[in-house]
Image (tube, rainbow, N blue to C red):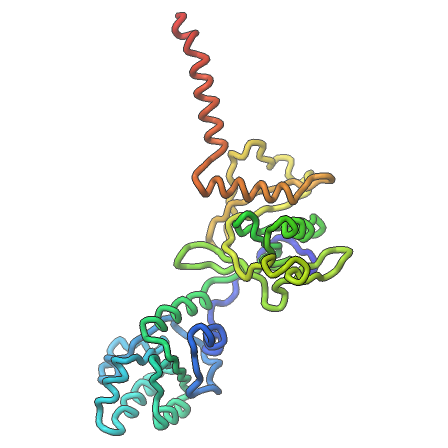
Length: 332
């Protein structure tokens, strides 16, 4: 957890396995393994849900076999209406057309013959007590999260004034110390030193988090590794937070030509194709970075609320100048 540069890492692969889905949604989706535990490493080729009703009747045109096949009440009722043994044959027809990921909803569980066929064809089958519409909605959200574009950024992320703020900059500029000061003033740590960023495709925004192994930990030079929730309480840590502001720390001599004196030059930082407001703060001896970052976050909240301080001041000055010129015009 040593300090690093602010250069982003490469975008990670968005592919995920059935095991990833199972581990991520086992509790929230109440998933139970029925068959195919040996095949959990299979890749989910299309992170979408498919209802195989038509395919079970024998119509396979445009059959979406790459997707998760959800067998709900309608499919189960149809299979139950078939002559004995025919339900297994219809299920096998799906397996023969490469379908390899099934979830039976509403407490329905496939019989021994279906389980045997799934194992023979290398398919994975889960069961859940959830209703189909509930499961389909939650499963789609989980798969979207797992398949979202991701990257890593060397920087410390905190929640300041309700906003997700990423602190980035060269080693030794005090990112972690600044974050620690903010936490002591009521902010919350998201990630120290290395922040995992994912893009939420549906909302067009970014979310930051720490890796599972480093969540809640910080490295402070001279002190070492600290466990933030143990020192400051569980409310001093956030699991994931929307990224709404990037604060770049630079040595004063590196930003002589880039210092924005009035805040009219609104910079944006592109991460995974999403623009995030970017504030550059010069670092020099005696500057109170904690106060500056907190103020930058509060300023961004005002902008998000529609209040542009610079525009408001500019309008006031313009109005004042217009009033001052009126006597001169009237005198003429």
